Amino acid sequence: MKYALFEIEHFFRQHEFSAPYGISSSDCEPLTLPELLSYASPQRREQFEQLWLGYTENQGHPELRAAIAALHQGVAGDDVIEVVPEEGIFLTMNALLEAGDHVVAIAPSFQSLWEIARAKGCQLSFWRQRQTECGWHFDLDELAGLIRPDTKMLIVNFPHNPSGYLPDHADFERIVELARQHNLILFSDEIYRFSEQDPALRLPSACELYERSVVLGGLSKCFGLPGLRVGWLITPDAALSHEVQELKSYVTICASAPSEILALIGLENWQALTARAVEIVRRNIEHCRAFFGRYAGLFWVRYPQSGTVTLVELRADRSVDDFAAAAVADQGVTILPASVMLFEGNYFRLGLGRRGLPQALEPLEQVISDHLL
Ligand SMILES: Cc1ncc(COP(=O)(O)O)c(C=O)c1O
Image 1 (cartoon, rainbow, N blue to C red):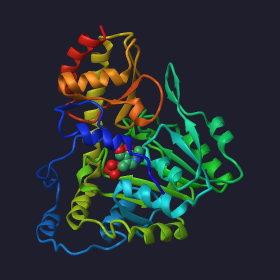
Image 2 (image 1 turned 60 degrees about the horizontal axis):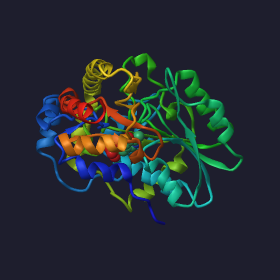
Image 3 (image 1 turned 90 degrees about the vertical axis):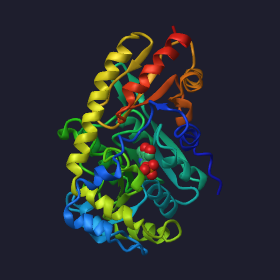
Image 4 (image 1 turned 120 degrees about the vertical axis):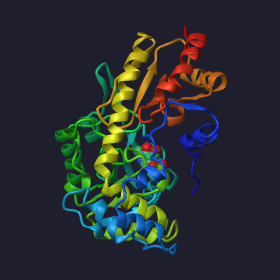
C-alpha cells in the first residue's frame, strides 16, 4: 500500500515555522502552557506537577474519556477511544475498510479522509461542494445519487474544512438517514464542532443519532490546544470500536501522560476556551470584511457561521498559485492555495482563528498592489 504525498502537511512543513506570517491556518490561537494552567483547579495542578511519566491506558485516561463523553448526549466514557486526531482517521480507515470497498467522501477535504481509502484500493466517489453566490453548498440529492448498493462508508466533515460550511439540523438528519437506510458506516469528522458562532447552529454529534457512526473530535482547533495532540473517536458500535482500538497498539499504543492531564484541564474549561476562539474568529471576520472589501471585485469571500476557515476566490488574471508564491517570497506571508488541497479553481484558504491575522494581512497589501493591481 503506497500513500500519496500528504500535500497540505508537506506545504505547511515548508513554510509554517520559517515564514513570519500566515493567513491560512486552520487552528485557533493556541494557548500557552501558563495560560492553560491558569484554568486548572488546585487538584489538577498538583496532579500535573506530580505526574508519574509511565505508559498510560490504551483506551485513554478514564477521567478524560468521561470528560469527552460529557460533551455528547447519551455517550459513556467506555464508548470513547482517545487518539491523536490524525491517528483517529488512520486507524478507522485502516481497521474498517478493505480493497474494493466503495466509499463516498466529502470533497474537497483533509486529504487523509479519502487518501487512506484510495491507497487501500477502495473505490471512491466524491460528494463535491458547489459554489453559489450565497456561499458554499452541498447538495443532498447529489449525495443520494452517489450511494450504491455496495457502498460501505460515508465520510463527512462539518463544520467543513476548507469552506466552513455547516448544514442545518434538517439536512444533517437527512444525511444520517441516508447512512441508516443503506446501513453505511458514517465517519463524521467533527473536529471543528463547538466553533459555531451561534450555539443554536451546533449540530448533534453523529454518535448521538446513529449506531453505525464513528465520530472524530479533538482539541486541535477551537479549543486552542493542537500541541497536546489529543483527540477522540466515539462509536456506539462495540464491534467497530474493538477493531479500531486493537489497531491503536500498532501506532501510538497510548497517549502522552502530560497531555492527558492538560487535556482534562482544557475540557473542564471547554466553554471558556471555545468562547475565546469564537470571539477571535468573530473579530477576524470583521477585520477581513473591511480588508477584502477594499478590493471589491478582486476577491470573492463568504464568511462562515462556523469553523475556523473559509475559501477566498481570487477573481484576477493571475493564478492563486502565483499569488501565493509571490506572497511568501516577497513578504513572508504563507497562503494555502486550492491546488494543495487538491481541488480546482482560483481559491485559497483563509484561516480566521489566529490573533495575528490582521498583522499578517498588512504585508499582503504590498503583494496585492505589486502583483494584482
Ligand atoms: C478536518 C480535519 N480533520 C482532522 C484533522 C487532524 O487534526 P490534527 O492535525 O490535530 O491531528 C484536521 C487538521 O487540520 C482537519 O482539518
